[in-house]
Image 1: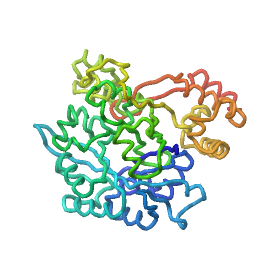
Image 2: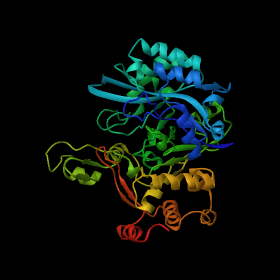
Image 3: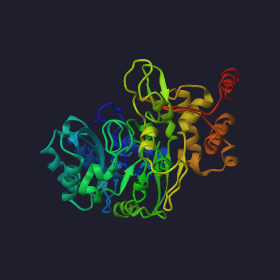
Image 4: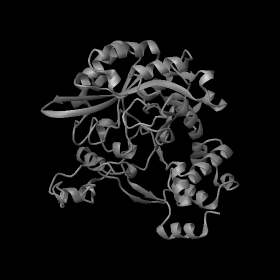
Length: 420
């Protein structure tokens, strides 16, 4: 069975997260996107965990569905949930201040209850949907794996500068350096929005590590902006086994941002207007020419500093990916309107209603089929995204990169003539 999964999201109980991030709204948007399996996020938060127990029905295979009384429409019956969370560890190790985020997957409420009981002795779980602890990432793995051997742990957004296993500002140079003897439990990392599999393939040390991608969504319409495409039984154990074994027959490919769009792809200082490639940063000794302080080193620079292979290397057991731009962004640019405008939302809902789901439009349907009900400018946008025919300004220092599908002249024509 082929399906799309997004394991990493946050609930309304996490900081800087939409109040609409509850399981009902998540299921609604997952259905629109074409995501069949969604992580719950934030199961460590006591209020949210109580909501999960109230609203989700266990299926006996490690997955859950919304109970009938909480479904907003029939299509939500086709969205399944897996119990997931993310925790933050901030600690000192090997002479440095470390900040590591880790995803935790669990098979049932009973196991989550045990995890929460253990962690509540070590930190305040109600303070945030993503709780912060002062002990090491290695200790986290030891504590969690002692609860159940069915739990799965994944270093989150592995390359972001501030909160990740390879982060330039607070991470390590290898999985083994971070997790030491507990590295045996780490068989997968999340690439994050600013990196893609091709960048990770440059490290031979990651050849046995499975690469997954998730949205890290803080609002419902961001669900699925990165995701994973499986062809296996819809079952917790089977899905985790496919990831652990890096099974190319069952984990078919990942869906990725163009990594340049991530907030930390290149180096720079946003307040100083400095955006540098790794080569330009090295030329300036990683110092900002405007303020004289150290640049925020991005993911591409960090990858290059740890890589032992040249750009373009493809490992023998690689699982490939497809780079996409969310449909709403394509529509917004075609209409020359903001993404949050009513016109963009209405056109998005019309197209999804016509063709079934966002991913069906972006991945599966031939252009000849889409042509029947898709305005020409949007159709051209979808075509260019599929071909990778884009203009890209990389993200840096917390600023998202800018992906342009249409040139300024084409946008001006849209303004003057209108979409239709």
